[in-house]
Length: 130
Length: 130
DNA sequence: CGGTATCCTAATAGATACTG
DNA sequence: CAGTATCTATTAGGATACCG
Image 1: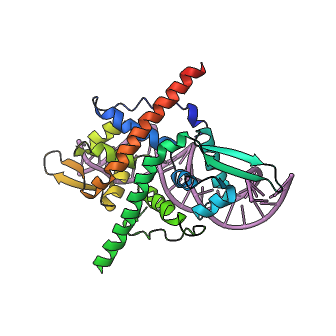
Image 2: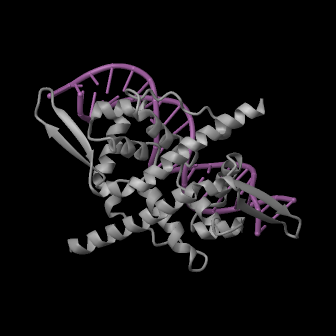
C-alpha cells in the first residue's frame, strides 16, 4: 500500500472465460484501496463534516494514533482526504473529504444499512435460540 | 474470526456524543464480517450461480486453495454460503449463496461500479500526466 | 477434484511512552 | 493537540507439496 495511487490496476486475474472478469475485478479494485478495518469507517465519519485528528479518534472509538495516522496518510495519497494545518497554538489540523470521495456515498450508505441490519439479525437469532 | 456468527456485536466504540454511533458502527459491523481481501470478490462470483471449488479458484484468479478453503468456511459459518457434496467419483462439491447473502446485492453492485470507475480514473490520470 | 499440511513472510494492529 | 517511536502480538496471505 506504499503508493496505491499509482499501483497497477490488477489486470491479471485470469477470469475463467469472459463475462465474469469485469465484476470480480471491479470488486477487487475497490477492496484494494478500501482495505483494512478502518478506511471505510474513517471515510464514513468524515461524511459528517471536517474533523480534527482527536475527534476522528473519538468517533472511531478505539483506534490508536499510530494507526489513525497511517490510515489518514493512505487516504490522502489516494485522494480521498485533504489535510489542512492552521497555525493556532497549539496547531489545529483538519481532515476533510475531497469531492472525489463523495463518489463513495452510495457504497457507504448501502454498507451501513446492511451492517445495522446484520447486527440486528444476529441479536435476534440469539434471542430465539434461547 | 473463529466464530464470528456469535461474536458480540461491537457495542463498545464509545462514539463522541450520540448521532454518530449508528452509522460508524453499522459500517464497522459490516466490515467485520466482510473482512479481508477475498470475501467480497468471493461472494460476488457466487452471485453468478453455484460453483465448484476449482471454478471459484479460477474465477478469483490467484487465490490459493488454503486461503479459499478458509474463506469459504468463514462464509459458511456466517450463513452466506452453503456447501453441498455430491457422491460422484471423484466427489463434486458445490458452493452456493444462501438467501440471506442476497441481502448484499446492493452493496456488491455499488462496490463493483465504484471499483470499475475508480480504476478508470487512475488510468486516465496517468494518461494526462504524461 | 477438493481439499490439508507445513513453512514462511509481510501486513495489521495494539500498548505505551514520548515530543514539539 | 497532533502526532512519532519502539516494541510486540496476532493475523492474513502465499508457496509448495501432498493426500484420498
